[in-house]
Length: 323
Image 1 (cartoon, one colour):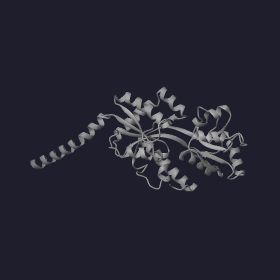
Image 2 (cartoon, helix red, strand yellow; image 1 turned 90 degrees about the vertical axis):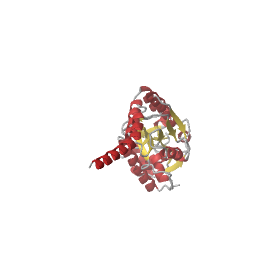
Image 3 (cartoon, one colour; image 1 turned 180 degrees about the horizontal axis):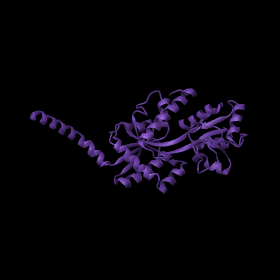
Image 4 (cartoon, one colour; image 1 turned 90 degrees about the horizontal axis):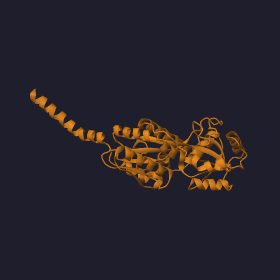
């Protein structure tokens, strides 16, 4: 009897000693510098927002938080680096919607964008907008849809990335119109060609079109969000304008490696939720037309799955081939 009790006590002590390092690591997080990987080139919105976050996180944690740009393959290279890092929360990645789109556009992926990425938080969102040139005889979204239906395939829309391309494809399907897609390498190039009359429409960010909207050189017909955007309050949402299903966003999200303890991801999320409400951080996000979200890891996981499924369906319906 005593021998059995001793064996049980020894086994319990072994289990406890095995769990102590993990518990200590969680309690001490972060216990060394934290790396935020931006899987895109320096200077873009993701890079700037990540650097603002890194500075504030470093102040809060008393640890260096460094930003490292690892561009390549539409975000896949840098993301893969983080997802294969040790599951301790010291390696983070900030991505855009292309993260979930890649899973359907690439024939082979080094990771599963849903199963292999531990969600931390949806940092912020920015609704896409529907913009047309003054040559298009439409002052409202309904008029634009009617004009497009009367001229199938004749109106061209530009996009500069997979997310904006799919915002256009989603519009085509839900409005029942046939628009011709023209790819671009950047949002500013779309604006240039719209101003030059080379294409008639675009699905882009509020930031990209804002100055042309204010000058009256381009016409924004609708915001694809749940509410009007503060930078253009007179522009209705697509819901108000007669397309009730059309709601789609550009977004910035943070992930880490799979199997990072939920206590750590929750701790990071709570700190980010505090930071994005600071006046200077809200101002920086607003410069990119974005509104802070900073939801929980569980909520962001559900959002990630929903976005992946939505885009996979859109890509299949639009007949876009994987590369």
